Structure formats: C-alpha cells, structure tokens
Length: 117
Length: 107
Image (cartoon, rainbow over all chains, first blue to last red; front, side, top):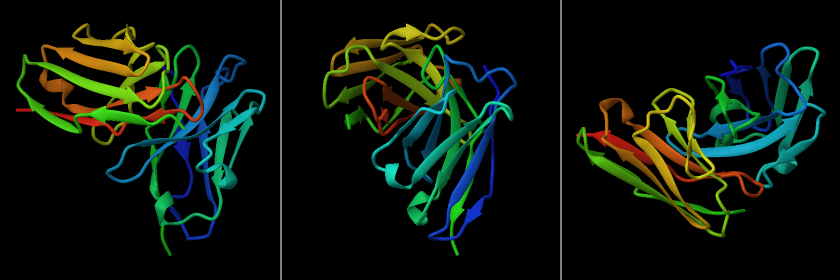
C-alpha cells in the first residue's frame, strides 16, 4: 500500500477556511490515479468529499461542492483540500485516499479538524 | 445520490460464528460495491471490491455476494480480530456513497 500523510491545522474558527494537505510518495501521482478526501464526523459514518486526478480534474460531492476546492501539485507530491465557511458540522476526521486499481485502496491515518471559536 | 441502507447497525457474535451484513442500494449498481473494515482510531481498509472479489491478503473467511441492489458481506468463522465496523461503498455513480456501518462485536 502507498503511504499517505495528512497535515494541516487541527482547529479552525467558524466561518473560516479548512485547509489540509496530503503528502504522497514521489512518483505515485500518475495518470491512472485519483486522489480523494473522505471525512468522518465524531461517532458517525464516512462521507466522500471529492477527488482529483493527476491533471487536476475534479469531482466533488454535491453536498459540499459550493464550499470545496481541491488542488494537486505533482512536483511537491501532494494534493490539497480547502473547505470554506466552515461550521461545527465540518468537525471531523479527514482522510486522504488513493484510487488506482481499486477504489480507496490506500488511506492516510486521518487528521482531526475541529471547528470552534 | 444513491442511498445506501446497511443492516444491522450492530451485532454481537461469538468466535467461530458465521456473520452476515447486508447492504441495499436505492438503485441498481451492477457489481460496483466494495466492503471496508475500520477499527477504532484507524483508517478503513478495503476488503472486497466488485461485490465479491477478495482483495489480496484479506483472509478467505471474508466473502461478498450480490448484484443490482442487494449485497452481502459474510464472515465465515468469526475471529477476535474481526471486531470492527464494516462499511459498504458504491462506486457506480457520483457521488460515491457509504453505508451507515455495522459494528461487529465479539461476545
């Protein structure tokens, strides 16, 4: 499995912007991969946020589409997530994942982001 | 979005038991369903894809079946290390959606 690592602030103020980055091994961003973000609210289930390809093509969950932006940096071997106008409902553990041959075949360990003033 | 209905939400079984978890989708998704296992504090792990194909390295006591709208994950001969929450995922159509999860506890 490919090792992924999320990073970013663990605390964001309401109405602010949540920003996370996922580091991936050098050479793993290829034309056959899609990179996703999945979140899990405390004690709740899993929600797919969106995905991005190596070329920057994105697909977002309509439930979050108006507030989500994903980007990818092939040179830095990382991809990023931004969610704007956050509320307490955005408090969750955020996972980055890789889809190559199989959907969500590799996952980061997850990072908790709390929205609070 | 395709709605996923997973049942039961939790179950308790003994080591050696056969356990069955079901996932029903709001529309037909062919075989485009996966099963994931998540242990507390950890990321989910893919167990089965294409409704019934076991991922390499996953114990053979796990099996999946179904197509269309009704799917099943079976654990034949439950082991203590199988205590976890299991999720189904459809990747037939955007947005990808997960079931609500089934927590499996060992008696």
